[in-house]
Every structure is written in C-alpha cells, then in structure tokens.
Length: 393
Image 1: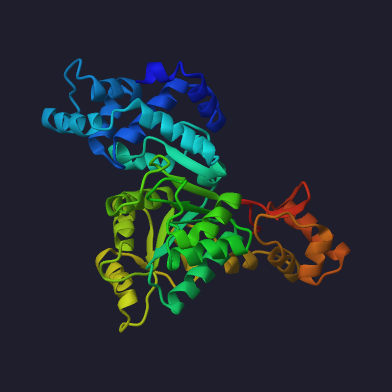
Image 2 (image 1 turned 60 degrees about the horizontal axis):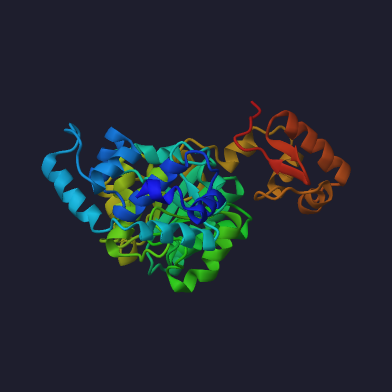
C-alpha cells in the first residue's frame, strides 16, 4: 500500500504541503494506520511499538512474518480482521487530499510540535495528529483542560469563562472539546483575551461538530488549533468521544471539571487524568444541583482538588498566581504596568500607558525594570509578558 502511494506525485505533493518531505514513508504509514485503526487501539499500538510503524502495517495487511512476543496471537488475529476490512489505499489518498483541501497539517511523534505528554498513553497513544491552525499551540506550556457539562448552567458557564480568561491572559493554553456548554464558554473566553486555545474533536477536523460551533471552531483555527487523531471525513461517534477524552487529559498539565452530572462524559476525561497521574480539579456547586453532582463525586471518589479560583487552578501544576506574582514586585506602578499587558499581542508604550494610567515615560521605566527581572520582554511591535519568566525575591 505505502510503496505505491509513495510513487504518486499528487499524493506526495499534498503530503509535502502538510509537513516537510522528510520521512515521507513513515508519514504515509501513520496516515494508513489512522484510517485502519480506531482511536486508542491498543493492539495496533503494541504492534507499532514492537515493529515500527511500517513493518507493523505490513503485518496488519499481509500477515505475520515471525512470532511477535508483545502481541498475543488471538489479539493479533482479531486486529488483522478489523484492519483488513479498511485496507483500501483509496481511503488513505482521500484522507490526504481532504486534509489538504481544508488546510490541515500533519504532526507526527518526534516532530518539534508533537506534545510528548501524549506518549504517556503508551500503546493507546495516537499514531498522528491532524491539525487545523497553529501546531505550535500543542507544545506551548502550560496547558490546562477546562471541561464540563454540555447542558451547563449560567453558574457553570460564568465560572468556566472567568477561569479560562484569567489563565489565558497569563499565557496558559486552554484545552477543551469544542462542545456546547462549559467547553464553548472556555474556548470563547480564551479567544476574548487574545489567548491561545485548542479544541480536540471526536471526528475529522473538516467536520464542525456541533454545527452550532462552526464559527467558534473557525475562530479557534485562526489563533489556536483544532485537532483530531482521525482522518478528515470521519464522523464523531459515542466511542470516539470517549477515546478523544484521553487526549484532552494526557496533553494537559491539569484538568479542571467545572460542572458535570453524575454520569457526565467529563468524568471519563477526569478518569483518564487520574490514571495518568495528572492533577485533577473540580469546582463545587450547590448540593441540590444535578449539574454539579459529578464534580462532588470527583471530590469524594477521585481525590480531586477543590478549586474555586484561577489562582487555585494554577496551583494544580505549580504555577504562580497573580497574587503571588504581584507580591514580589517592588513597586505598585510595576503591578499596574504588568496588569496592562494581557494576552499574546504585543503592546506599544503608548497603549500600555493608556491601559495603566501612567505617563509614557513612567511606563517605559517600569518596563525596563521588569525586563531585567525577566517578567516582560521586548518583541517586535512592543512588549509582552515573558513566558515562564523570572521573579523578584
């Protein structure tokens, strides 16, 4: 399958548009696996880990050439039966062309923008990621998942927006699933402060799901990333939603459930986070609210941390809160200048002066001090907060 596709000029041209031409054969093999296997297929993952992606593909479609110690005979036989049912090279070509048509990029393990945190999933790690938007969003730290009920209350959406906006302003990447309710509130709040947000989908990145979030997902593509492990054209299904949840949990340094019912799918994501040893937070709600029953269950049964502010969420992964950050600044004017710099956009001295209420000369002097401390940095077009910058003691 791969050898014939590697000789197709149209396929090679499309593939090169999605990523550099190095290791084209491996890229094709991984695309083939994304067509053959459902997300999280542990048998496929074990076979790839043992043999490498290309030889594993040959075994999947042609037959075992030797004894494979890591994959049981029955499991391999069942795997080959389901993979061969999808073993059509035209499906691989369609996946490549469809991705090119929507401007998707291909990110593989070992690439600069591959989120290595996904490797903690072991045999259940994705073979690749299809990305619309900026793949660098996947490797920016910190990344925090803010998730919850689709049928969220006003209370839940308000808190999700407040948390996401505050965290995104400070440079965190907001990760969620693009759904109605809590997910949508978190994505919109991050976008509203010019922050970065990533949506993991259960279907292909060419399919807006839910349809009512078509415009929201388009905005996320413009400034962040919309990501999936399944090829373009793949429909979201209940199983794929559950499989997608493991990616949200694995890629994030912390997962926060804002609102969730007793059997909410958000608990599935929380379970993955707990199994991976990722910090897990839950927001309490009224004891009479069915929309918060899942959060209370997480606090009681999953050893989740109770979080009620963005500062407490930062503590989940060891990040400093705004209060801690401001406490170590030596001048209240420095605090005013730092508060004036929000989001990822570079601001001019005049804009910082306008936002802080300080004279331009005073603002410039404060920026100079903060730059020496590693708190802000000078970039083309003005000034930004430094990522992971130093602190004054």
